Length: 104
Length: 411
Image (spheres, rainbow over the protein chains, first blue to last red):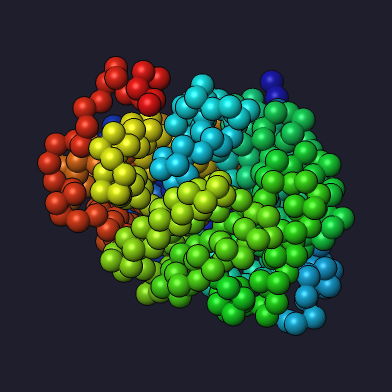
């Protein structure tokens, strides 16, 4: 039996905090993960998730993505290696490479 | 995407197989899958950008953001997309050229059989990088320019951005890389449309994509600058007129409209008014095969952190993350009631969309704009510019065995 050796801990949320969304469409149903919304607060996350799922859901759970511990087997892991900082230009390098960057 | 040049001027293009299932009619080598059952995937490889554009859907910034997929993770994602059958990956950003491993990723996409194309602001495309991207197997570079110099630079937040973009375009063309324009039309730059096309045609560009503003990222902050319905209709007419004028004088430019499938209905009406009933029917049949707004079906987005979105513009909601689950598993999971409802949206559209006679070729256009403005996922798109008389009534043409898509009446 494989163990959950890999922790998925890269940050999520491009513009603000990310909230994992879970819904139940009937009280007899299991809770289902239906993605995540970006929102700066619980209230706004609730509004955003409601606008997407209130049509059909009877239960809504929101969980801050950065409070979620994620573990998976190696087989379920996307590639290996560090996140991409080393693959990306530094800000100084980017500005010096920009054509006509002297006009900034 | 709606190809005006294909529909009004019968221009062959490599994308026709994807868009209209019309590969058999084309003499061009076709980009095609099984009539695009799999989405074109936009991959925002970074959030970092050297410009700061007012309408950036990805809300890109000059600072490096945490959590970018690494080179190894990116390659695993490309393997995943290849296994799933995605026909095209569009490297976007942020500005994708800030990633030093872009050429390595482009080459890998090419190697695993996913056609690599690029969306860029052009200002980092030196002669060397144009050549290295070409050598890596890049098939197309779309360069964003949003007006003549003054207006473009105002939009993009950097003086000299226009000149930098044109230099980047020239470097691409010199390297033998097919290159086109991306232009987002708003009230602020609509007047420059023909001028930019004329100028870039002289440079050697022959492909022009005109985007309607979608209300995602910083686009939500400039909704007031969006076109009125009347001005939008006029701008789309100008694209149609300009395309035909170019073709009439033997300059076969390719022009496309992106992001508002009310354009599909308008093109049928335009063909009927300015060309012929037969041409209008032909346009309608192609657009019927094309299938209307592609959100959640024929286009997908993976952001720099691996979050999967319904389109590149709709980054406030994620279906899942490729670090948790394969792209194909996320995209196929219709236990997600939102994904399922969007794919069956005809059952849910309300207001004038519910009984619009062009519903089959439009499908309600942008659900993101409806959600942003009306707070209702299935309300009419606020950018719809069709007139009441165009909306009501039975479908404009019978469809069926005699369609041009089945190859029997492609006159």
